[in-house]
Image (cartoon, rainbow, N blue to C red; front, side, top):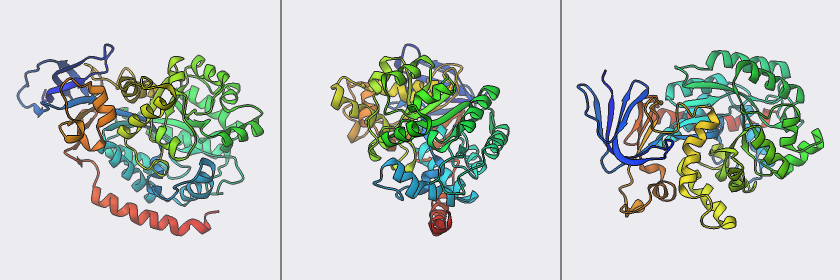
Length: 445
């Protein structure tokens, strides 16, 4: 069977031994079938000469909002709750099916171009089907779902849902898209956060997650004012409340988790709750710095994400890796959050958060062929001799160094060109879409 052979790369495996060596990788269909120091190509194989380059597992981002990519630059220099109430919720309320599609495509192009192969995404209340269409066409691996919001006086009426209708639409989307494209797309229930959801909704999400055996993806403890509101409404802190209603379990993915007390950290550990750390977003919104070294020491399962384009303002995993290391060193010293730890969070950490550690996150025989080829032969990444490869990837590399992105054994980007997305069309339609949405803002309430 003809396949693809990547030859002569420095392979950063992230396998159980975290081996790094010069060698070859063979791909057939959607799987890695061989990883060794030398592979003889078969007749009909496509051979990729990767000599002098670095082959890494596809990067995994576990908190993204594709529906917000259109809002890049529309909500700068605000703290979280003002950012949501004054800009993001009105803009999300203005969305139509076409604008959600092009917002998703804009984000997906950026993600694939910069070496991200898998995402955990949260959409808005309406038009989620359009985002799934974009994800399907782009070739990305994704766990996504429509956002659920049935509470809050400051939420635009277009976004404030009837509880049962929110659940019904979510289940309908799950039944259509979960395990779509040979399992490349999966569904997660996505209640936005406690202060925009009734307890009735959250309890139904808990039960449906167990019934369908799917993930729940939500925000928690991102902002001190958010926690004050949760305490005022529910009588307890965020993570304590989620445990109280039975939502804390291995299927729960929490974005941020900046402001935690000892009890909440123990809840995360005890229930094997997954956490997505978003340093770029947390810094720009002035939300705070999550206590990642402490959470790692407690064996909390951690990963990385860029969050949405209007609070970052990019979706670049190389940027997030570097930030996640640097912001901890100021308080904890230069050895905190070393490069290998960070790279592990960006690969196997993300795979564990998605519940796919047996399928993605490392370069091993039998795993999905999600691979990224990085060319570190440039001024900003040299010298190369006797330099740790993890340090080069985390501290020196940029998204511009990504030469090839492969997902499910399919080359979706090579030499800077995303093959699955028509870039000129997406850029043109993204501009047209945001102009249309901005024109609707006065009437969306």
